[in-house]
Length: 255
Image 1: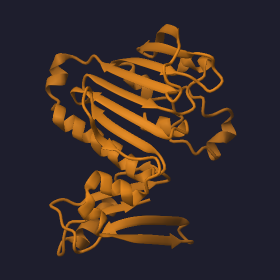
Image 2: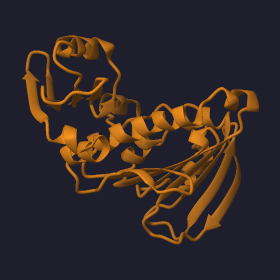
Image 3: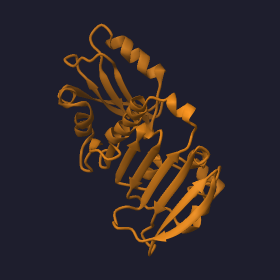
């Protein structure tokens, strides 16, 4: 859902969580919004507004276009979307269940900044909910939000528990280094070294930040983005951890 907001050119993304996201997950952004004519298919599987013709597959650069995320969510949760486009006179509030739209309302939004508001109310059985630790689930959400906040300098991200203050809040005009300081602390921000790599034969460019030998923590933190997408790669992470093992644990950001 964060990636959908970025695809919609949002510069501010706010995430609110209740019960570690097991009960309610709410996302707001100021992106372009969803057109009324697309609302019928928002939660249908294999539908998208990001492709118009087959040839677009060779040039598409958005995060998602397969029409799977919201469709899957609608099978385990009541999905509520409030949205408004720039040229629309009013906002629309829609509710979905099992991929189908079952409520459509016209609304007047109190703020012009909000263009998209998504509320996911999970209805999974009590047995499933009991097997999730609220603190652990919230930590996983914070990890994802924090990483996208670091990578997307020039955009504002926030994360909070319902009814409480922000645990993560990055500013729209902040740099990557400032976002790292905001999320991981001043100590690591002071010990970062810049990296820049390019290989024309392999056709890739990479920029990054890595902590120096003065910084040491119990666990290595590895942030990897490929084509702006968050990626987990043990093939890249393990050799770096092995190299640093005699010295200290490190923090590494690569894009």
